Length: 247
Image (cartoon, rainbow, N blue to C red; front, side, top):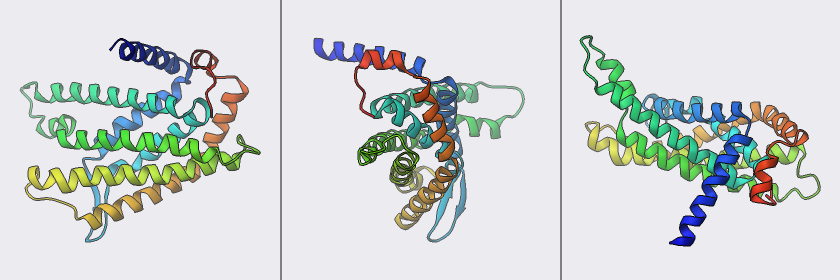
């Protein structure tokens, strides 16, 4: 127990330093994208016999691009810590939204309350899916980067890491969320509304493909950010605390 507490204390200290060292715009955009995904996932944008898309697809690419940049510079553990921080902020935000939705008012805010109040099983599904896919994305990005021994900091290495990890991470994020939400919980709590497994699978593949396209569009910007961080020695205090971080 003593070793466990000591390890948790050390991990917390490293996380605090990390969040100070990662440039604030990246952390802010990442947290906002995670919160937005949770809200937008409540709406199905399109559904057919073999295909379904929820609103989270509009912003999820930003979350994965931010994780890819942080993983490249700070390492996969650091990116996972940032992901856990974002999830905790999202849970706090959902709690505040829920409290606001149940406070009685003289004006009818039922539609507004329904939106911000959220749905507990969507929150549960999105949290499980995001944490699982974030860990997969971060360590897949790191593992792919190890293949580039001659020029690990080059553009080809960066975009390859980003493309591979984003597609795989996004696919499992979409699949876990879709199965939990639309096959496990929705039939029970949404009067029989559900997606088939084929819809979940095709949604996950299409979503991962569309998000990969957005990653391709914005990855050059992510690469420039990564180069700038290395040039300006961003995160030195964190590296001094955690030691040699293999990136």
